[in-house]
Image 1 (cartoon, rainbow, N blue to C red):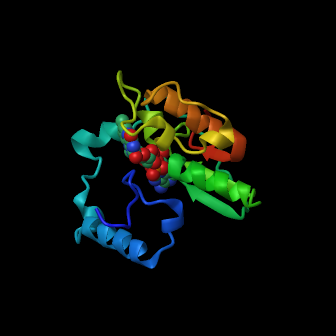
Image 2 (tube, rainbow, N blue to C red):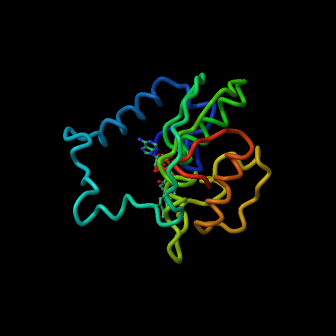
Image 3 (cartoon, rainbow, N blue to C red):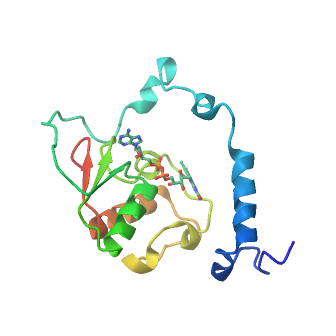
Length: 166
Ligand SMILES: Cc1cc2nc3c(=O)[nH]c(=O)nc-3n(C[C@H](O)[C@H](O)[C@H](O)COP(=O)(O)OP(=O)(O)OC[C@H]3O[C@@H](n4cnc5c(N)ncnc54)[C@H](O)[C@@H]3O)c2cc1C
């Protein structure tokens, strides 16, 4: 282990702006970028088509929403929710999250099978814990608790248009 990394094995916040550390992050990122790009993924068609259906929210046709907003975020998983929350924090509140599913939470909206849980410690994995005042119930928590946390973030900081009401 080099001196880039703390004794705890993680870069410390004050180290994050260091050019040598940033170069290392870039190197690690480059290792994971494949030349086949998105073609590495299997299209959810044919026998996989059922994966695109939303088993939790019945589809309700509605008029298109036509709006003029400052920021549109596509996707209401943690990435979209946290972006919305950070924008709100910075004073940008004219934000819409557009979500294809029937609710927010991304993979945590969908992954509700028995035993589904995060494998990173919840105190590390769950975003915006201090801001929302939530304390995870366990070291790694179940998908329904994580989904509830995603909704907590959405309620506190964003507006969203899902494909269906939720
Ligand atoms: C069971 C499970 C356990 C996991 N555990 C961990 C863990 O312990 N630690 C960890 O770091 N990660 C874990 N992950 C990975 C997890 O995917 C990420 O941590 C994170 O939740 C991904 O968030 P995201 O917003 O990037 O993507 P997603 O959660 O996939 O959200 C993307 C959203 O965008 C929507 N969308 C996509 N395209 C469009 C479009 N064109 N129009 C509208 N909406 C669109 C999708 O419907 C989806 O809701 C786990 C994943 C699973 C399934």
